[in-house]
Image (tube, rainbow, N blue to C red; front, side, top):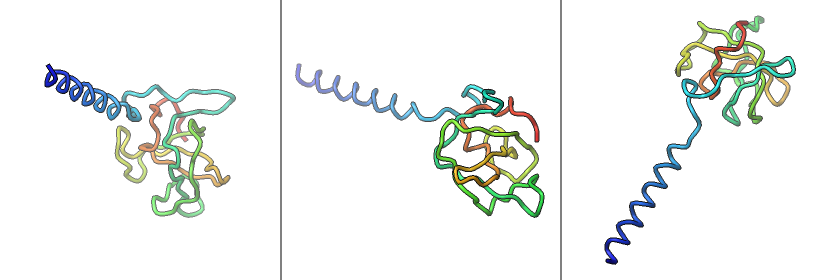
Length: 124
């Protein structure tokens, strides 16, 4: 009888561990979309995600080698999205979103740092 209760306890513990590990942040493919509120677009994102600068004088080209700040808030607001830029991976492999980092610097966040589906955002 004791062996059965030990086996049951081990199986219950394993089931709880699997449930906790599986409860991580959803991918953009399964997450709800970004939403509009107060004239801004809001998305769920990774807290502490870097915000990258731009190449040259134009704000239209993210520079994946230059971090201008970080986004610790979640959710955070974004102005627009741009596809066809430097490779970031994920469901939108060349998509970046334009925003303002928590330190006030404007820049781009990689789409992989956002757990909300970013298709609703307007194009830049």
